[in-house]
View (cartoon, rainbow, N blue to C red):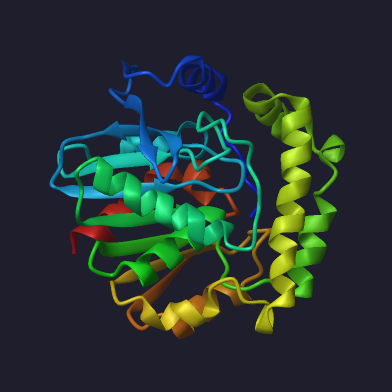
Length: 283
């Protein structure tokens, strides 16, 4: 999925994460660190001291601080311990250079699950946006004993020709607005961003060769935890058929539609989204 960024205060957060990803504190009492996971060094952010641990999984080319600023700041820190991470090749989890083999979503899922084990969390909930939602679906299916609850939004379990047309329409980053392009170039540099984004479009397109264009369709019935699927009615990147498919195939799922929500609904309507998620997680 496409990543749309929350830009207010973004450069400050990006610079703080990129400088070192050493153990630091900033105004929202978020700790940043790195852990060795599955042969790579993954950067993560952690805040809160609640009994219910959460792992936040970012979208394509995203990172914890760019994709989840309002959640790291706003989710209840007394009830939750919130962890966000930069998948390998993204954000401050570089090196390695990001690549997109046929199992890249499964690889990210295993990385996220293992990171939580390394941090000492044996049971936790998953919140995944866009590509991170796909990763979270896979993780919940493959490791049901570890996942308490699941929240996904802006996500899909298969790729259609309609989806490919959407992705190709945004392949050329030179046609992006300055507001959308600049944060990416600040984080990655223009060349890395351009090349990695094009590689992502190719990477997501390869799933059209699978039966039904499946990314993880066959895994959805294996998700046993309570699942909240959130969809923005005005999402330009994810046609409304995708959340319906998730609802139909995940046994214990419910759907919440935000009428004015777009792809970045958790950033644009952060307070509403955070309340929705907290209520679901605390049921």
